[in-house]
Amino acid sequence: MVFSNAAILNAIPPIIYTSAGDISNSCTGNITIPVAVSNCSNVGAISLALNYDNTKLAYEGYQSPNSELTSGMLIVNATTDQVVLSWASVNPANIGFGTLIEFNFKANAGISTSLAWDTQTPGNCEYSDPNGNIFAMAFASGGITIAANAVVVNAGSDESIAPGGSVQLNGSVTGGTAPYTIQWTPTSWLSNPTILNPIAGPPSTTTYSLTVVDDAGCSGSDNMLVEVTTAGIDLNLKAFLEGPFSGTTMETTLNTNNLLPLNHPYSGLPWYYSGTEYVASIPNTSITDWILVELRETGGGASTATGGTMIAQQTGFILNDGSIVATDGANRMHFDVLITQNLYVVVYHRNHLSIMSSGPLTNVGSTYSWDFTTGSGQAYGTNPQVDLGGLYGMYGGDGDANGTIETADKSSVWGTQAGMNGYHSGDFDMNGQVMNHDKNDVWYLNVNKQTQVPD
Image (tube, rainbow, N blue to C red; front, side, top):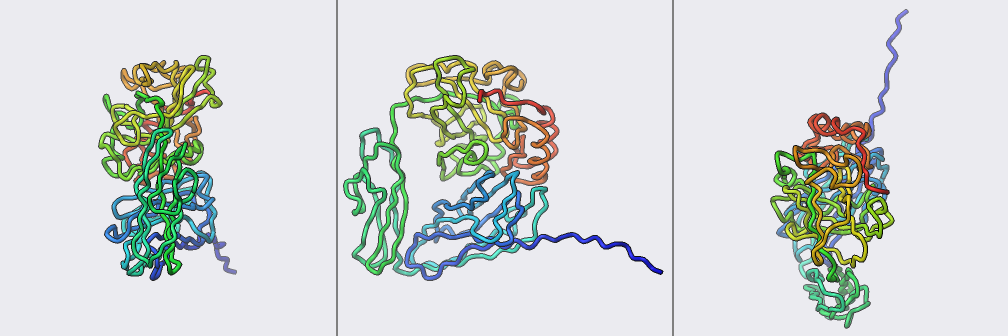
């Protein structure tokens, strides 16, 4: 009698299909491209790169990310001719069949072009499971044709006004068939919402959408922002991050290698920051990374500066010399707030432990200052910062940003990203590569460290 060995059956995940939507002979140049996926289940990380012809298309932003992406960190970046999406989470996405996200473009009239997935560059287009295993994938490009006389709407550039001020909006439309029906929304605080160039005077920062419908019924829409600024305060802040620190400054490798995203990475768990700060390009070669700053105001000491005393948040950049600046890469952060009590500042980073000033910020006029780098005690708590050799900085290694450097940061973050290149939370030394150095030289040295920022 002959016995055969028992067969071991391994379930092979189905192929994940990704396609960019086609648009044929569109009567408008203001177009939205849906990214459709199928068999997209148990996904822990996504990297996508979509190439476009920038002589025919201009990227205008994204909208409607799938609800399965809300639990993780979603970053959408744009270079001159490529839209790059990256997403990662400890909670796998189970989209199945549906729309992953939508990209907005402004197209020239009369063009014919294509959108092509960059499958040739390793790591640019891939899906992986929570353990880092890469799925089998297939990608379909999209085609776009725009009518020769297409309606193309431009809401104009963003504007800034002082409280009580006003500004003329500079909407325009080309193509289509006159007469046009023009509508700005919201209609509030506009001199006339049915003309291209109304006067706007909103009391607070407002996004206006311009929609134009031509005589043939074809419509296009575009958005612009009117920002209302106040006297407020400026922050003169300085801090260091342990991971990229070298000698007396921090490395700017992520910046040098064009890996920094153009929009901030703090919209997801655990920050849930709702601001929409975005830059057209990284404005300064000295930038190390994005940073999130929070103001807390209280009549008491540092221990009373809890989360409930938060009055404002803002993202900006941290430079290699530790300076924290606004999104223009040069000027101090400005907050439209009135301070009547003690002001404390909290600094958050995506993979370093957050810190809070140990005392109220000092001010000269409307400029409030604090330097965390001169001593560990500049941050609230007991040994709240790491000694960098006479200077002090934020502890690195908190990959999931939950406030504790622990095993999960190695297994669930570093472990699932090991070997990857790019802008990843497991890249603790921030050199663009998730490698053993991140685990051994940063995470391991700080295991069990916790943030001491009051809840």
